[in-house]
Amino acid sequence: MDSNMNNSNRSARKLAARKPECGFMMLEVVISGAILVIGLVALLAVFSLSVAATQSAQEDMIAKQVASEAMESLFADSECSGRRDFQKWPSSTARSRS
Image 1 (cartoon, rainbow, N blue to C red):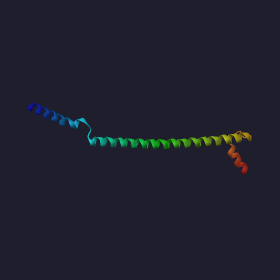
Image 2 (tube, helix red, strand yellow; image 1 turned 90 degrees about the vertical axis):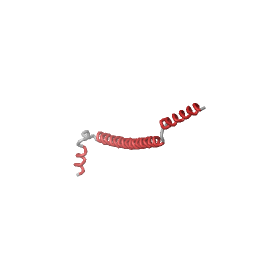
Image 3 (cartoon, helix red, strand yellow; image 1 turned 180 degrees about the vertical axis):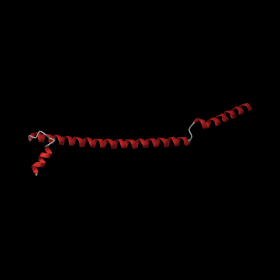
Image 4 (cartoon, rainbow, N blue to C red; image 1 turned 60 degrees about the vertical axis):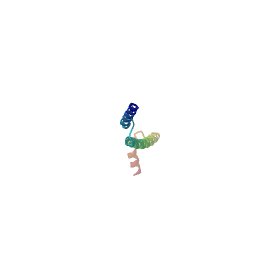
């Protein structure tokens, strides 16, 4: 019986010696969670910046399209009125007004 008790004491000591190595400490879990949260917040910030950049690019594209349509309209008006030289068109209208 004495050898049986010694064996159980040895196994209990082995388990006690291994116990800190088997799992994660609470501090490790908290630190890893904090790192994960910081990473997710940074990712969210980058995502919001990309959405803002996309919206700005879309507004620029719309402005360019409107300007292009206005230029086409001016070209069409100058061709219909017989003015072929668009570069001189603004100066010729300025002279006719004076």
